[in-house]
Length: 392
Image (tube, rainbow, N blue to C red; front, side):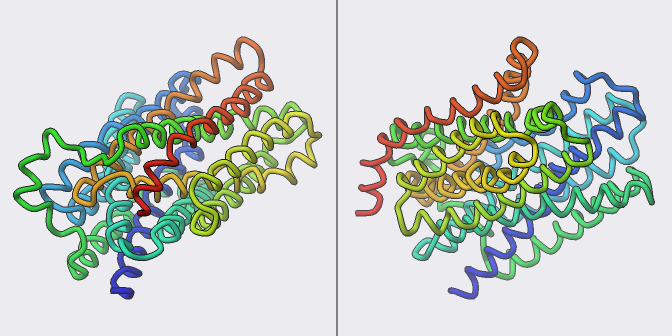
């Protein structure tokens, strides 16, 4: 069982790496597309929004479908659909065609988070689930660091179309490998049993609605903070005197810290407990963002890895806690709801904080981002009873 669990975790990690790579190469491609197609900033933002919106829209349906067909086939099909969306993007010649390709790719990528998380939770049902999910989250951040850097290096040599289609071919190969490995492991091959399916339309398997709502609210605030900060942090650094080249370094520092944070905070929750860990990471996130506003450029750059650790570390703790609040036969749909809310918040927050930036400036917007984090603290009190009951 231990070897099987590690194999399932490894497959989920590889899938997460591939999908987060697809998601974050958009940060490299958006300026290229803007220049080549003559896009406005609104059109550039819309390209990012439709991809994230597609991801958000399909997460709950993916969880529901997994109960009928199992996670394995859906996860492989979604990975292939995302890769094909980027293949089509490489062949597209206009803005509307590109929009359609990214919607298709986003919908395909919507299967990854709920189904992979469900597979890992099932494999580590009686083991160190939060550490396993922390490792799974860490793999996604590796994809965010490695893939965009590789594509950025490849674009001058083979063009953006060649770089995108090359990575899409990697994604198609990964889809085949995912399917074969999961079928061999008999992981996520079957849906829920007949008697469980009969109550699927009315029972979402949430053990404690109040606790789940509190956890989801923390996730919404946490994801809004992350996307808002990453969107406007470069503008803050430029105002402090940063060059455009140094912005790339800054983002790498945040993502590297985030990768470490996702891995370490899952382990920290095993030792200190969920609530204490969330309080520590959220206070550190809000405090670090507010301190960053007052620092000169060089000290701000030095602080960024620590910001990344706190900024991304909370998510590992939250993902592992979903399984405590949802019955095992409804876990895929529970993760679907959870990730839909989180990804939806990530998609909407940059626009909302952009309106604040237009009105009062980037420092005001980031000050609001850092302050909003502290709203998670009273929400943690609502988790005490359901988590104690789950542990009993």
